[in-house]
Amino acid sequence: MNIQKPRLDEILEPFERVCAAELCVHNYNPRLGAHITKSRHSHTNPCCAAVKKAVGESTCIAFDRDALIKHMRQHPGPFLKRCHAGVVECVIPIHEGRNVAGVLFIGAFRSSSEAHFDESALVAEEIQPKGSERQKLLELLPEVDEVRLADLLEIGKTLACRLETAFLGPNVDQTEEKHKIIQDVERFFRLN
Image: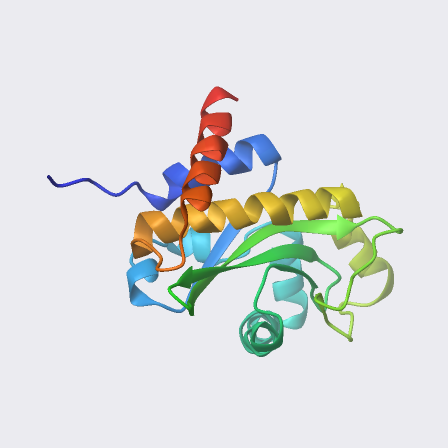
């Protein structure tokens, strides 16, 4: 029996519609990378596009690749990140067995003034571009509070499990409970 794997967008688009959040996937594994289109690999929101134009894409790439990978070695679970431009995203590792095969980004957002980043968060020290220009760019993004960010991280973990199952095969550590959670979430998205 040959079961056809779903397209990546068939899994991600319902989440984007229901949660009103953009998804981006970076891959570190050719098995996952074969399913990711260029548009899914890039942060394409207007704020990120303007920042890349203003400060150069290399700054963004260095943070999303180098700083993120270094951070994941110390914080292997899902976490929040705030980049050099002040943009906030939820970051959820996608695993193949015990290895990180990719990263799911949920966002981009601007954090509400009361949002707190715990020790697991990756927060860039330098904020660019500076001043009112940066504020205008951030105003293009939806504002989220701590509760919404925590909810998106939790839902993102389930979405990452779904991607692992669909594109990387059964995970050795996968349990019946994970399968049940995935089915419940998929049922929710189909109904909404």
